[in-house]
Amino acid sequence: MAELLFRIANDRQARHWYFYGGVPACWEDYVRTACSHAAVTVIDEQWTPYIGELEKDFHGNVVVIDADEAGKTVYDRYASRAHEGSLLIVLDIHDNKQALRRWRNMRDDKRSGITFDLYYCGLIFFDHRLIKQDYIVNF
Image 1 (spheres, one colour):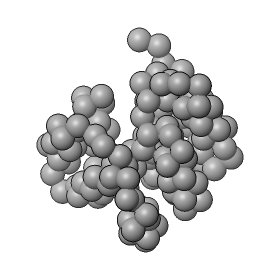
Image 2 (cartoon, helix red, strand yellow):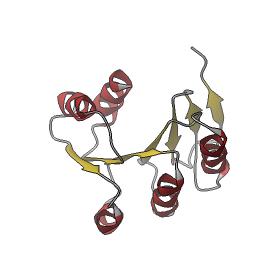
Image 3 (cartoon, one colour):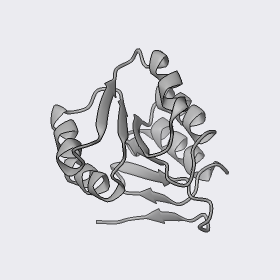
Image 4 (cartoon, one colour):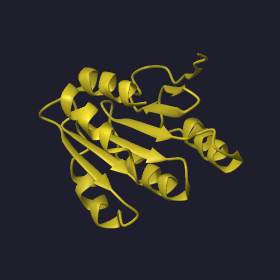
């Protein structure tokens, strides 16, 4: 997963990365190595104070969430304000039936664009200039 984040950070050159929930510390290092100017914020369970900061500037942001109920709440807030450069990474989408159901709801939501199911995570792009498609990548 860290290598995927490195590649995404290198490609997107996002100004800010938000990690909702606990993540391995090395993930931050991979993102910062690939994109040295990126600010990385790790937000624990008390994420509600950060919602306002996130909503102020979606341009150039990448948000990483879990496929749990809190992640669904963040998705709803993020998707309603996302733009063509926004990217949402959803972790553990196949952990259990509820997580898979939440992922499918996010994927099928009209606000999302192209999605990738990588089994261990899902990628949601919000560029509506492209035709909405859902990809399942098998390794």
